[in-house]
Length: 107
Picture 1 (cartoon, helix red, strand yellow):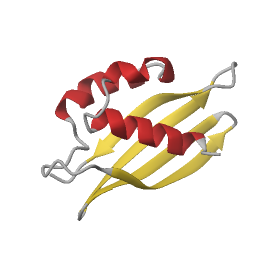
Picture 2: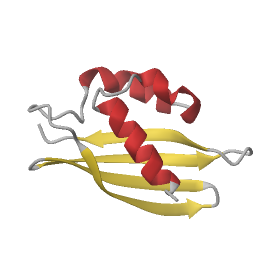
Picture 3: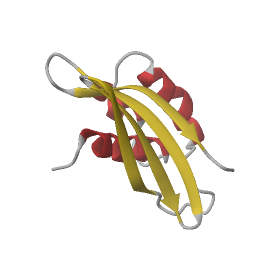
Picture 4: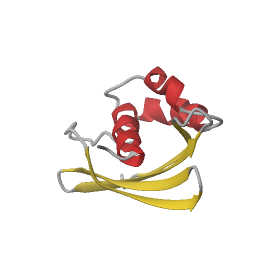
C-alpha cells in the first residue's frame, strides 16, 4: 500500500511536469494549494529541458502533529535533480488533501 505522501508526490509531479492538467487536483487540494498549482503549472517547473520523463526518486515525511504530513520529494530526470515540498492535511472524512506546495528547480 502506498503512503499518502508518495501518492501525492506522483500526482503533483504529473501536474508540474505538464503530463496532467491542474484541474486533475481539484478534489485533492485545500486552501491556497490549488492556486499555487494554477500559478506553477503553466511554467512546467518539473519538466526537464530535454523533455525526459521525471520520476519521484525519494519521498520523505515528517509528522508535526496528528493528521498532518509535511513531505519532500527528490525528482530525478537523467542527471538533473529537483526538489518539491508539500503539506498534507487529513480531513474529518479521513481523506488527505494537499494544503501547500513548494518547488525548487535548478535551471
